[in-house]
Length: 248
Ligand code: UDP
Image (cartoon, rainbow, N blue to C red):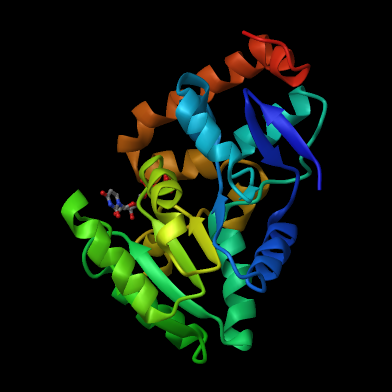
């Protein structure tokens, strides 16, 4: 499996199906694995924060969540064929674990969202083994309790949905204490599973315009999305240096 170095972040060149295949293999190994799905905003954070960049590169799987990252890989001459969004990968993994019986824990979102997601997922996959839910609003003192709850649940896989970069940092900080096989940092996916947020229609996704759809639906994202043109310019002007292994 190849990687492309995008501003220092080593992104795996996989599509959603290949990423799900890797995660299914991880479920058979007896150690915790981390899976993150960086978009251009997250890669820009890593570009400006060496420790965050290190943390991303320590992941067992890093997929290109967003058309910006796919374009960047093209500019750098190592094209990733298509985006591998966290939500799409999660769906494929759900289809597998609904049959295999692996235990799933839902962590993140506002109070009640994980439970709502559980209810909707069970309508769709009646045999899905969801062993726990926990909202994503807590202070540092509550962390040991959350870790304990996940461990006691016997979960094999946890969807960690705290938003970036909180979820990646949480996973990196705590994974060695967790007796699970896979930790996936997948942002707002629980809101989508709960039915509170819609994915863009397939046509918009196919045209690479999911970001525009989300912007129209949630205009408060405008400031965050300013990272996108900055990302494009940085990749254009500085990306090749990274790719050749040069220093800034
Ligand atoms: N969230 C959380 N704890 C926090 C802050 C945010 O659980 O302290 C949740 C929030 O409720 C939302 C998700 O994290 O469900 C972030 O969603 P967003 O769409 O902003 O993330 P993205 O997918 O864009 O990273």
